[in-house]
Length: 415
Length: 161
Image (cartoon, rainbow over all chains, first blue to last red):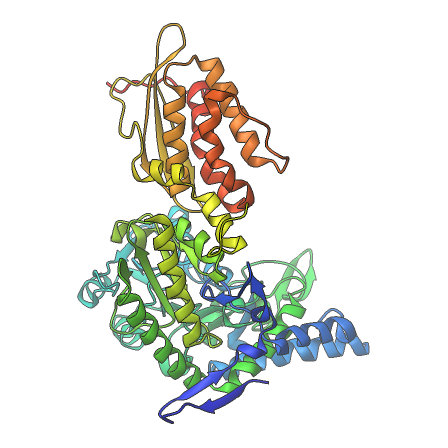
């Protein structure tokens, strides 16, 4: 179990979660692993690993089908994860929690099922310049299919979306605004509550890509009043191949199914098919049951700690990370927005990020290097890629010191 | 490889990857820039790290490489490899260049103990360090693939006007 202790000053709670994560208890190249790549994929706590193993060992069967005991157990485990997810983001109803393979599928679902039937030539979709490719490419595909136009709200040199420019784009031709809650490449927290309010006033539906937000801060979809909110299991300490699409019930109700298959139907005949009710209408085929069970355990893990506490701890850690990087000769920070979470991109001298990543790995420090699936962001800053350190609740100040030491060593090798 | 005192085994691996010759060629790449009278051009892209190199060759009528250059951006390994490549291929004929490309690509991509290299290829042993870094082999072979595609590719002959 995770433990929480007050720090010396008692001002904010320190987290002591590292011990809960078996993967973090290993050495890489002779050094204690420092994992600073949670924005790509987070490690899993023992509770998640055990929940999946327990399910596979004792409780596996197909869901929503059989009358036998294991099928009941599997269905209970799967559906209780949905309930946990509903509570975690404070959705109004479990019908609003569609289980998907991840954020990418959630966004594609909205593009094809919500947007495509109601969009055509002259219509517009608005995104921002800091989006992950998974919140760019589905819209490019949709626009190719329908003749609609994709418009991009630009960012400034701190990595913030320029509010006036975004507002200017929200005209009556816009059928959806799709925007990241937190940028995966820059760490910028977009002011989504304000953005949603503005979009509402212009009758523009809003999809939030919350992949990088949900693991790091409390998210309340009713409070935000967003129409759709997408996120992934593996960024929030759960397994890969799991994710959520939250959607307002009335909107989901009106949308046609996205994939056809088993479990999404009530009745099938060759004359026609009656679709199942929400949320099953969108969950064709046997789902990733074990993964969803693991995701439910991840939600329990995070709920036990409390997302306010996670957010406060990580905020302190990010401030230390940014300060220490700033104080390191040769470091240039990319992404310096006022409100940020978890992520810091940077460059060291003129060292190519890929070289840096290799040298850091050999000191047991795992960072991400490259374009972070956000090539338009890299273009804006005029760099082919960056090094990126991203934090999770298990990181410590010591991890940051290890990163800085490793950077100094990289400098000595390559300069 | 044992190095005195201050280095541990892993630091040695990294030093082996970033040998002095590699650092030198990455910081001061030879034949860097566009070749105005190129007869053959090919682009090499490594999407993993964003390496993007363009290799230019100027061939004589007798199929020997009169001049070569490259431009683009990449990591130390890919830039150094391209720089070493251009140094090597200027003045040799295309069949020999292709044979070298094959030999170097295979050498870096296989786990077998590397064979001795002909004397004219000796400098390229500086790239041997990547053999212990699977994720970096593509960086080292990028320019060599570009060489092959420049010489064999359907649209290899281009006008640079």
